[in-house]
Image 1 (cartoon, rainbow, N blue to C red):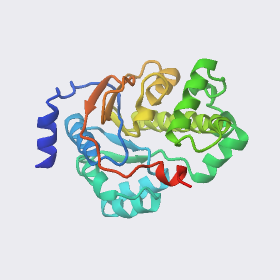
Image 2: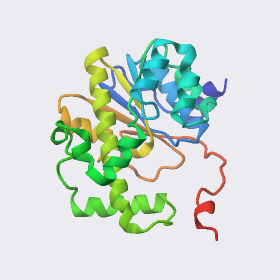
Image 3: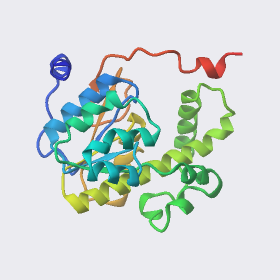
Image 4: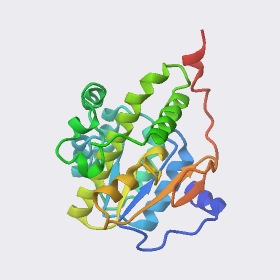
Length: 249
């Protein structure tokens, strides 16, 4: 009932079929209504596979092989809050579960070795071998600075931008591999920052496979003008101030 009510309130048109080869469904991670919106989109899309930012390849393979293990695989991922993601899995139908999360040790190595070196021989295909334009680098560092409550030195944000570029490329590669294996359409579940069309997963796919079509939907709490193909507004989640623990003395 809540899912139906939410989509009635949003009063937005359903996606055309087929909307694209790969559809990226962004989210605010802790917002239950964002996940209900993703679930409704999946029911409309009926993807062959769903790529998750949150699960490693091994965790996803476990969940895909035995759907009774989905909650356990999710718990192993460390993301928590499985109940608010459960509607996404319930809406998948027979779609295959694909994991795109990089292991923690790999993420740590990005800081020391760089995104291109860690990604491997396909780094150039996804643009990881090139520095960002100065203006984009500065913008992305500022966004990371604000996202981390301005509680860390600004210079450290360069490493976080490298990690974000690496993760976007990993998600894009996983989506392309799923498309090749299972056919279209493929869905990607990831944070709104990864779903943006200017430098997120859609941009990486466009760089690596120009003939593959993408469509990005941002499920957001307010329309802040971020670049998506479509924006769907969801009610703001109730949450404590995320910066309080980092900025309080």
